[in-house]
Length: 296
Image (cartoon, rainbow, N blue to C red; front, side):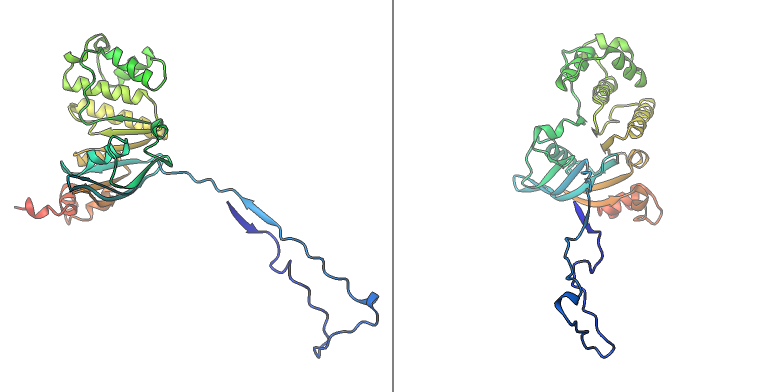
């Protein structure tokens, strides 16, 4: 709340008595002839209520160690609501640990994480997000339909067959797979099923950890089309990938995590400036200090 003064600056100061040109006070003959006393009134205020929109994700000085080895070191950044944010890093950079801390699957040693302004340790803070892990492995004994029905039930919704069929069509996944057990799916089919379950949740925040894994070029293009739909709907995306080109194409901003520290934060175009040739991969290597390891 901000209060601003709506009155004049001298509204509560006493009016000076009349003075003649020599500076002497103009006397009054009698008490009745004196100027009436100034009545003081309280200042008037105009009150403006300011609504603060919390970030979708807020990481503040997050640290995590495993057996004394740092996995995250003072990781701090925000993802605004409606933003498409990418996280890049080599294997072992700390991306999975960061996501585990976010989802309260492991506790950071220090720092804090907020989801839409609420501590990530609160179960209710995760009601507005959906998540697809890098190694998505649904229960092998379930059929595709049973899996999607289970996911709907976990979020307290009813399974919608028409919506499921429409999503499978967008992903070019044969609807007959809904009657087959997951154990008979290929890697690409399994990944599409996971994406379908994730996107059917229609949550405000979508967390995708290497979602293009196992997908052919056509499927990758179809997923990008679905992500564009999310953008038009005002959803927030947190997207991790080893494919820098995907991050540049999909995300507004990206961060580079290396050895548990945030080494870069900004647009892909800004990161390109780190490489004289403007190549994103070369810029990434320079950001993490590995450009000398791969030079010819």
